[in-house]
Length: 267
Image (cartoon, rainbow, N blue to C red; front, side):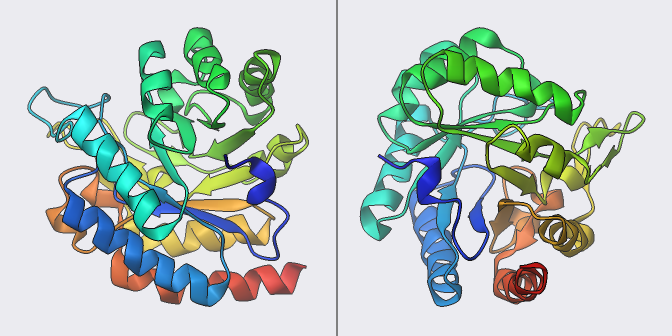
């Protein structure tokens, strides 16, 4: 079973990356293989990310998934095929034990980071728990979310910065949050894609600013983030979920090379 010690403390930052949602087996394996080739070459610890179901959608007709069991089995196949850990979101308490049978890390979505029962259920699986900071919370308040997991008997906690609500349709990133949350003793990850979302659009489809992914990622590494979270897809415009703020897959290697140079400069 993977622990946070398997990821943090390496020479490089670690990476959680993959499609927003599991769209099918072939695409998931294709993305995982491509990213693994890059991260192996660059000596970056890698976790494949894919949501087995999307619960927070703007409209009822938005894509939510291909079926829970089908998507979770694909996540397991990624792990078995490439020997890499996997992470997925959970939304309700009953999902924790179910998802834990298939993945290595359980992720708590930002809007749900204060849900005590959900945090406790995730903790009790013994899996690593990655808690995304709510868009409505200060970084200091995240110590209490993390403490709920610890008090439930699990110290394998990671915290993810993903921007703070600014007005109705934008987010901003306060990079002070990275060192503030690191003081709690847990690895801190920068979500370089969701932090560029432009939610609550009148079309009912979330927008984004993917041209700034490199900017967000560079700044995060410069201030010492332990890891990065990047959603990526071979053709973001064709993605079934969150295509507006995903990084094109063929741009990932160039970006990671730049980030490694920044990491080396600050060490």
